[in-house]
Image (tube, rainbow, N blue to C red; front, side):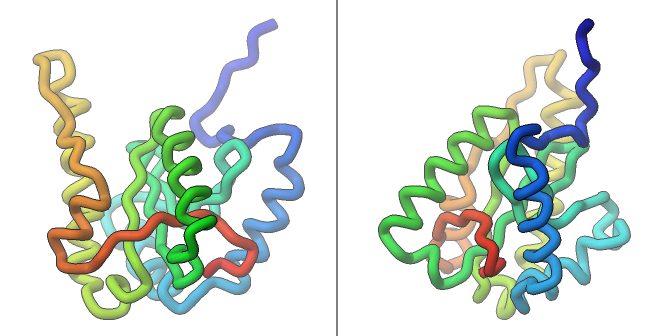
Length: 167
């Protein structure tokens, strides 16, 4: 029997219970930057439905819009460490191979340039919507990376990964 896969069933079945417990912990101990962005993203205030600390296979992402497969990550200071940068790059590659679009922002961007962050999130969703609408006509998604986007705002980009500390 073939099981129908629903869009919300993104978790790795074997690790789900542990990851779900960590996701709940991450929500309870969210960083200030995560809480600040969540104030905007929750309850469709952005015009789009987002979830926070959502399990995808073996990862926990900060925020996700399942309809557009858009992941928003917030990077804390520990993401500057060499070993974490490598882990984050692998994580991003995995998520992108599974069809997700990942955009990243630093804590500093959330604190100091929140309106720009919100505009970038909306712009990314609109690009995905446009691509989905134009796909039959041969339209192409703007594949500008988050690193390019963050560099344009004058903030050096960094990679991210979910951590139990939520940093």
